[in-house]
Length: 212
Image 1 (cartoon, helix red, strand yellow):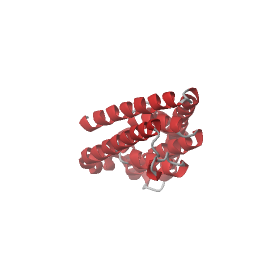
Image 2 (cartoon, rainbow, N blue to C red; image 1 turned 60 degrees about the vertical axis):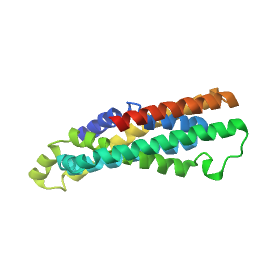
Image 3 (cartoon, rainbow, N blue to C red; image 1 turned 30 degrees about the horizontal axis):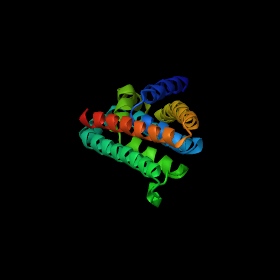
C-alpha cells in the first residue's frame, strides 16, 4: 500500500508539473475571476487525473491498445476546445475594453462551471491515461494473475488517491499564482494585457497539441 501511495504521488506530479495549455488556461482563469473559482477549476483537472489513474491501475496495460486509436481524434477535440476558450477570453477582454456590454454567456464562469469545464478538457486528453497505463504496464496483469482483481483494488485505489492529491496540490499552486497575478494587474489595461497574452499562449499550445 505504501509503495502504491509513493508511486501515485510521483506519477501525479509527473503528469501535472509540465504546464501545458490547460495549466495556462487555469492560471489566466483565476487571474480573471477569483481564487475560489480557480481552485474549483484546479480540482477539476486533478479529478480527471485521479479517474484516469484509477482506470489505468485497474485496467493495466489493456487500456493502452483500446485508447490508442482514439488518441488522435480526442487530441483534436481537446485542442479545438482550448482554441475556443482562448478566443472567448480575448473577445470578452476586448469587449470589456471597448465598453460594450457583455452577453450573459460571456460572463466569467462560476466555480461549478469552472470545475466541469476543466474536468471535461482534461478527460478529453487520452495521453493522460496512456501515461498512467505505461507506468503500471505489466503490474496490473501480474497482480490479477497472482490473486485475482480484488487484491489489487486497494492498491489501485491508493494509487489513484495519491495521484489526485499530487495533481490537486500542483494545480492549486497554479491557481494561487493566477490569483496573485490578478491582484498585481488590477487595472483595466493590465487585465486586458493579461487576457490577450494568456489567450495567445493557450492558443499556441493548443495548436501545438493539434499538430503534435
